[in-house]
Length: 69
Image (cartoon, rainbow, N blue to C red; front, side, top):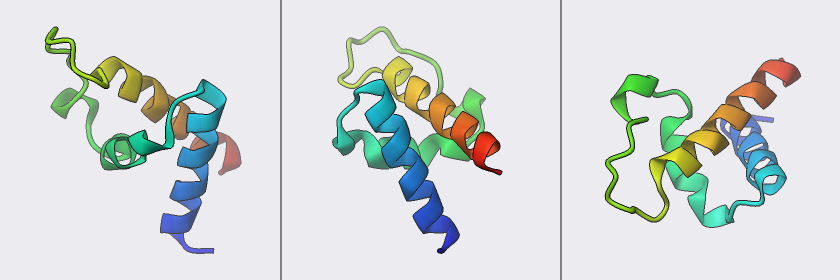
């Protein structure tokens, strides 16, 4: 299995665990390896999805990757 496929599987698992829609996949994938300080700040503009929702998914993906080694 390729590394990209592994990440996709983990993203799928994280989104399902959190009850978030699959259409957040690209947003999450783009931020999993990005430094938090470059994207994690909420602008307060009532964006949909809010970066705080994406952050929950990114945090779960990172945790699952650590757990799975």
